Length: 297
Image 1 (tube, helix red, strand yellow):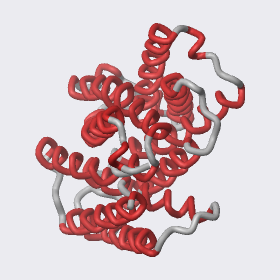
Image 2: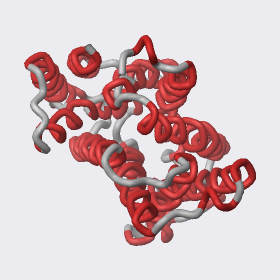
Image 3: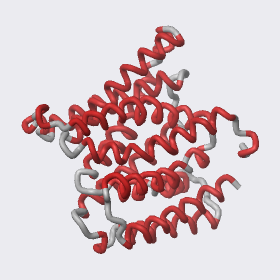
């Protein structure tokens, strides 16, 4: 599928994922300042999932939500990988990792996708391998001790684990039988991941320190933004893209989002731009760019 034949709908969906998802890292960072990570993330996706299910029922009829057991199971699995694993660990990681750095670490997703494809018998071309190696060098710089500030290595490792799980979820979504209606599938994925987030939060004991009176207005506004734009609009666009566009093209969000996230984090939250973040981020983005340009060539 060549980019010249890509429909306008795909480009619109890509633009939404580029901009809105780039801003969600900032929103997450604001939310976790006063709200528990997994409980807030779970509430976010359950709310968004219920809203989307209602929209699907009104737009396509209740029958659009009916799926076979196998397709429902696939949607639940992908939702747990993408939302509970991928997004949930990002939320937990951002309790100690700046939003811009988190976005740069997540930019490694296309690298893990290449490795997953290679593990299943697909031989990547030399330029793609070079892009992966370049990206790994960038990650080494990003995780160096020179990051400084309040960044903890444990938080960095959590975000890196999130990127691996997100790649696994994206890869699985392109292989498994999912609901015929992609929006219904997205609703089930968000509900599965959201319920998983609530259960994980309860298992971690987040409810014991739950004091809604201490939640800031900024956190509430950020959570609302994440529900409507980060989940309902951007995530749904991403799920639709996974089924309507080449995976290599969809993966381009991974090197656009960090630019948006780093800029917003620096401008709004005054997050420091240390040399490991600038240099390592540039190397990762360059590596991802090489991978995507090769895959689309």
